[in-house]
Image 1 (tube, helix red, strand yellow):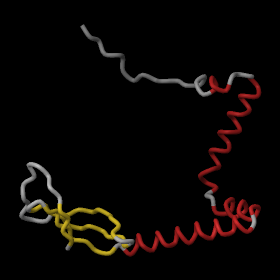
Image 2 (image 1 turned 180 degrees about the vertical axis):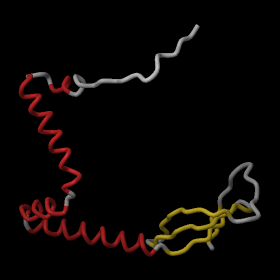
Image 3 (image 1 turned 180 degrees about the horizontal axis):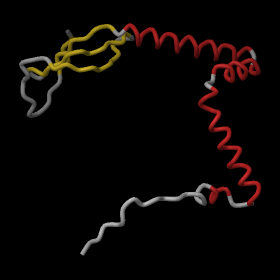
Image 4 (image 1 turned 45 degrees about the vertical axis):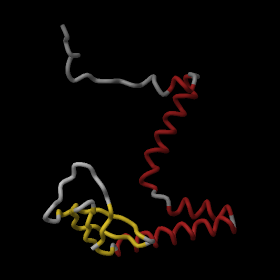
Length: 132
């Protein structure tokens, strides 16, 4: 259990712990708060070590480190690694949207600041409110 000094005006003391699901990091350790209560200007929390989040954080750090280390050695190799690991499902729609947008731009010769607004349609499901 950890006690955190916390002065909140008009906050009543709690007799029982309340179930909660919070995540926090203390001195590089990830903790999962499972219960908490407020008593005598102190927040008391019951926590467990969050080993899953710690492991995930280490894996992400290792992955980023491997990409950045390769970038220093060879910039072309970095581009290949980025393309290999970047989720293609995410960018497939964005690429096709960009191609459609750029083809419309080329065919109409419209100022680029206006192209964002020319195909916007707002459908009103209800009439505007009547005042008076």
